[in-house]
Length: 92
Image (spheres, helix red, strand yellow):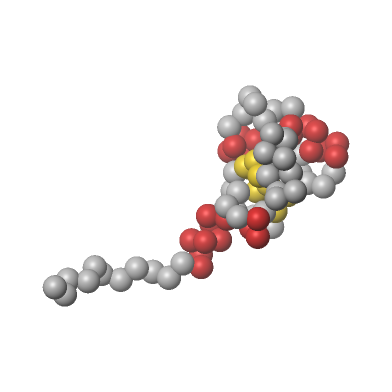
């Protein structure tokens, strides 16, 4: 996941605080389900777009800082944009 694919879970400090209360006790997927219960969904949410939540550290954040909570959509976007692989090249 790279900085160009980061989508913050929320800009609302109160909702963000509620999520942070569970960062150490829930899996990334469970935290996403909890976010849904708070009315938070990633852009494009649906049957084929239901990412977990991840921690990210923007370039201006110290490595020992808390980071930010983001939807882990980088891999799903990358998979959508990837070209299908053809059969292996058997030419010798």
